[in-house]
Image (cartoon, rainbow, N blue to C red; front, top):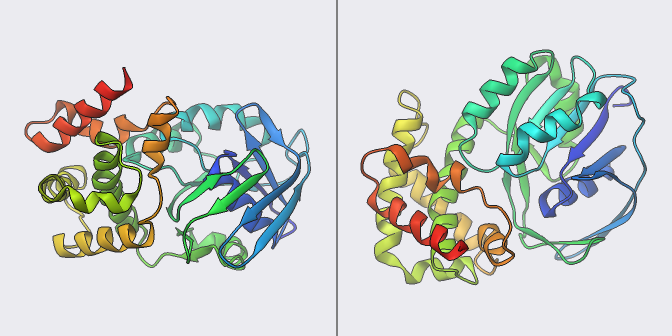
Length: 290
């Protein structure tokens, strides 16, 4: 893939994990809020330690590239604008943001139609141990993606990393992840839970959240919900099992007093009728911020 430069935008836990993993199969540039990241970074996993050295990227693009956005949903549009000078026409944009971001993707696709826009789904937990060290908390971490047929070589390149797998149904994967985040992130943040496993202690709220989140998917995707209620619930249970010892990322942001993706998760229902549990827990999160 020498014709492609790979840029990962976002040097948090997810972005750093993606960048280090992809650096094992090709050249990767990592970018943070204040610019490109250089030097050695370490990824700690269950059974191995990966170390990658990152160089500064060229100041202007010399060919089309792959840009992977591992930023918070509220930072997506700003990040695209910030790194626009590096993006040659025909470049591929792979967006890994959590939450309901379909309107943002539609807007960006219209504003920057010279790029190819795609969604990816992150299924792993990770945390920054320090500026230079990141730790994976998931035994079998995955990023699911689907690119166009014209991007076959790029798909093969991504799949040469064990972290990436081509999705057979990316909209289904997106909906599954959104359902899990609506339930898990909302409940853990509302009660400031230390681990995802503690969700099971709040059965009444959990059952109502699952009902309301499934109903909300029908509103967001009125003609195209890709799974049954039972399948969504089974997916949530699997994610909770895989990440049972993890502290939810929204809880980490809450405790650190950092901005959260509320508008793209529980905040979606603010102007909708019903959804009493989502609204109640959304209010609890807002109250705990003050």
